[in-house]
Image 1 (cartoon, helix red, strand yellow):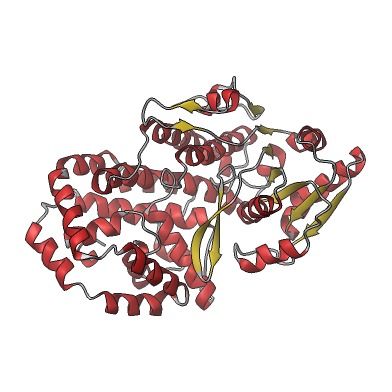
Image 2: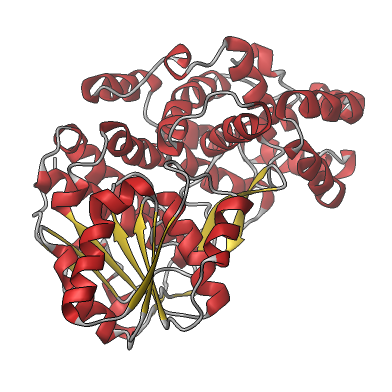
Length: 457
């Protein structure tokens, strides 16, 4: 087990906590010996400590900001927004503040539209105070307005804080929108440790999801030839290990542990920025969460914090992989399955289960042609030729039993019914998980092998 990280942590080039990312801040990037690319990030500074919020005025001045646009929601305004406004007022820095109307704003067009409508173009900097939705909205606003952006965290609930894109719902589809990362992150542990317990669990769950996504990234590179970087994967795994060590104490509100979880989440976002894609952090487990969000948007069904949903989905995903690694692939069965697949029926079922968001998924398939028989045949040969390597990746994953024991130890949900999900909803969510984007994940591997989901789940 690694030592507990200090709750007074300022992430600068000399800090070992960057898991190998220090050269990014020091020199603007480094040439990666693992993948041959140059890795860069745009985050200039992250302060994680008690009283970090007090650095707000000085941090804005360092960015050249003379008037700030302050965005929060009703809950995050109480948590840190009001204090941020007071600090700006005392420092003589003019600002325009807007508190979103919804107490739990959705990551969608309405929230972004409201932020745009209240945007003050005389402001030359943006301060987002909140969790994932506030950050994602502020990143889009900063990108469009071309202003520097400072993020004040109010909960260690997700890993996208330092990533250069925003996860939003558009036309009913959960999608990734190009944006910008914060220039500065201020994470005050006195604020973070008072976040709702479920939000802290969400941050832990979002990191636990990497047990699946990292393995799927490696396997996808074997099957589709997509880009993969072992160094970025190492950075991500190191962050996951750090969070796992501190999860129990963080959930209890321990400031040191909350700082360690927050640092791990920020490093994870930087690792995604290095890769230029969400692959290191997002696999089939994230898509299960996305589908649940889409159903909630369409039908008003229950949805939980993203990290809770993604983290829970790790368990059935690992159980499927445990079964899959015992399978001997059958070429003829796989070819027959692809040949006989009825995509029209599949699309109709998808529309019924997901709602309007399915239309965007169907439109994507028209371009991506994931179910094309000829493309399937090529992928299948790669799978068959590298099955021993693929199976080794599955065997290297943690067992579902060990992750479930870890979850139980911190009070994380382990059963579908705890999230209000029926067996049918779980099955259908996995059934359509591979349709959200052209990312090769577990359910696409099952389809390529001609193995019905019913045999695995």
